[in-house]
Amino acid sequence: MIAFMRWRRVWRRARFMHATPFTAVLIVLTVGVLAAPLTARAQPAVSLPRIGYLAPGYPSDPRVGERFLQAFRQGLRQLGYVEGQNIVIEFRSAEGKYDRLSALATELIRFKVNVIVAPASPATQAAKQATKTIPIVMVNVADPVATGFVASLARPGGNVTGLSLMLPELVAKQLELLKEVVPKVSRVALLWNPANPSNAPLVQHAQDAARALKVLLQLLEARDSTEIDSAFAATTAERAGAVIVLTESVTLDHRTRIADHTVRRQLPTVFGVSEFAEAGGLLAYGPSLADGYRRAANYVDMILKGAKPADLPVAQPTTFELVVNLKTAKAIGLTIPPSVLVRADQILE
View 1 (cartoon, one colour):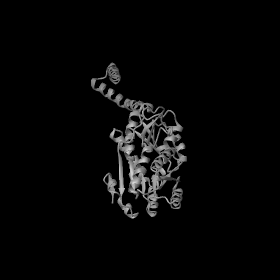
View 2 (view 1 turned 60 degrees about the vertical axis):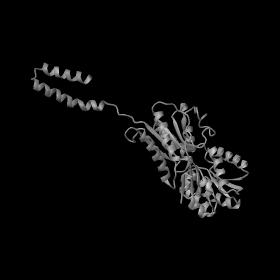
View 3 (view 1 turned 90 degrees about the vertical axis):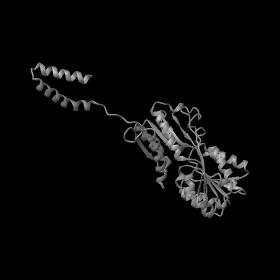
View 4 (view 1 turned 180 degrees about the vertical axis):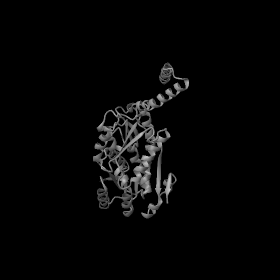
């Protein structure tokens, strides 16, 4: 309407100057062409929503981190978000060094991101300490209530919500699975990273489950690859008969190294996600990590549309998968019971 009125004024002025109709049209078109760039320049630039992605990092095998990032991007695409067109992702990785997460979280805040996606507990903790106002979507956190990230699963409160792996219950089931595969086992080693805030509650649950099953649990700490090597040396000294590996960035990053240790020492081992079995681990039982990243896109979408993290219930895994690596079983001289094989979602041979 405004543009029409402007053109009409130009027309009237041309006619007022006694221009012929043909000349008047030329004047109007010339003024319009000259004014068009000014109008275009006057339009404000469209600001795209910015997602901060704070990854703990997988330095020795970037394919794992890339797989999860692609799953998240796939979830966004399914909701109509295309990176660079209607959304921007600011990616930051600590490359396995947890002490870098705090600075990276602060950097994302300076970029004025609309929401921070925080895979795993260390990244969630760093983001939560860095901001109380920017929404945070945690991904695959073991126990967000025990670690204090949320008040409850149903009513998170604060600025954090997202997806939980609910690993406390899972650890007990993994120990039961080990006992089914190796009925006579009496000493089980548990490999864990004490630098991950989610792991302490899991260790407590594992100890409770071990007592119920009359199994002695040996705790082995592993903050990096060097400690992984020394931890497995301790399994020999302590005569552990099997191993449980807690899922987190360090163990996931070094899963092939861990699997090699277990095969070399002929130790039946259960892990939390299928990626470990694919790397040579004997058993994996737990939820799909990639599925959690895809589902995280739903939280981002709801938040960008105005939802508050405090009001968005924390989601739990919907499916669990059991993966059995028969090649590894043969390598360590173990026969997997038919009762386990019949329940397996995937058998690797």
